[in-house]
Image 1: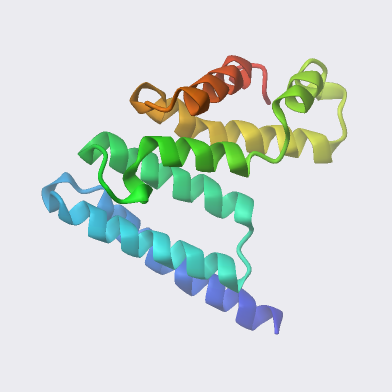
Image 2 (image 1 turned 180 degrees about the vertical axis):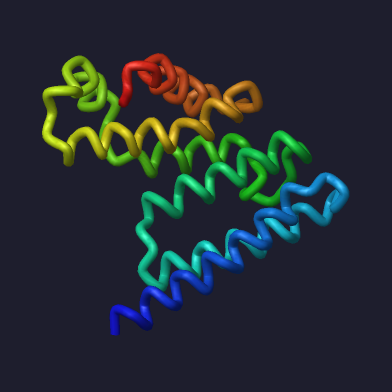
Length: 154
């Protein structure tokens, strides 16, 4: 059973890799969005097969941020920086106050807490990429508060 699950995850990740690579090729023009949408679908399938949500979110958000920078925004929510910003904030495994508290002495924290802080930092990388494209002030303000903490995260 575990082998079947791993095989399914790996097959979907292979589809993700190929399509994400084509999505980043500027020669594809607007076709980049179709490649990216296919890559994101494959990542969703890998997650359904058992890939961890935290890992999937980092990859998903990174590709979405890249597409927003490369091609600009679109009516599709996937390519809207405010939607991506809200998605990033919703995916963070800690609230900001907890992350601030833990970040002050993260080297003395248990490995499980350090991992949660690291997940926050990994997810926030995409927020750094799109920050200047945010128009929703509530989302932008919360992203700014998190980004002020970014350098203190492990």
